[in-house]
Length: 309
Image (cartoon, rainbow, N blue to C red):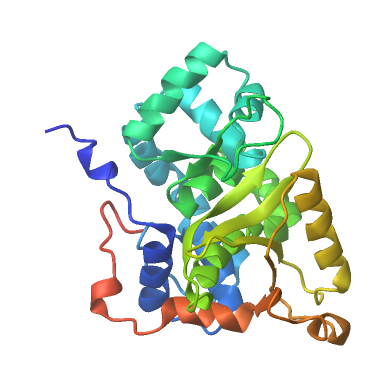
């Protein structure tokens, strides 16, 4: 049996989030998402009372050599794989742009990609609907574990200075991108929240949409055939009516006519936005994410496969 077989079967993002929540008992959902975006998928116990930047320093940066050694066992220290993983982590996740950032050829990139799929580090995601044009649209690449995305965003690109004990470049990059970095995890978990909120007409297919002109955070189809389009706002300000306008512009460019629109907001909604609520417009706030962590028990905990840090 290959030593990599244990990496091939990955738990879902929701399973990882439930395990993380059970193990670390976060004080609120906002901090749960922020800390999960960094440490998710590794089953390391963490002190959630510690500021995230300090936790990263003590848990990750100070243990760089050991974690790096463990990760290179999975990647076999392949330079193209490491370049591609950083390209995916720091870009828009589309294959073409990841290869461009990695500065490797399509052939080398596809070979590295297949290896990373086999080893359970990456998985492909496709636009839920085919774009109206016949253009060939690239798939997107997702990390199977949030921590690996964090590592290849903020740690691996600065390995030279980190090895010397200088964390400034890495810490400055994280400080500049911290808010934006959690957006993807928020959007992915929002899909799970939407699945739970459509009880009368269950969602049977869900994902995202993108083409050369536009992208839609969440696109779904219900059992009865209705099209649902969603937009996610991960910021400290309340969502305004302009979010709905933006979503409608995005769907028009994609030549889609949603039956139901959904706005998901971390910080809630303005009164004007609340007044727009109707059967054709759902509003989901952070409190709705609580549905993802109900009825937690020991069975939800995913054991750590490697070393604990």
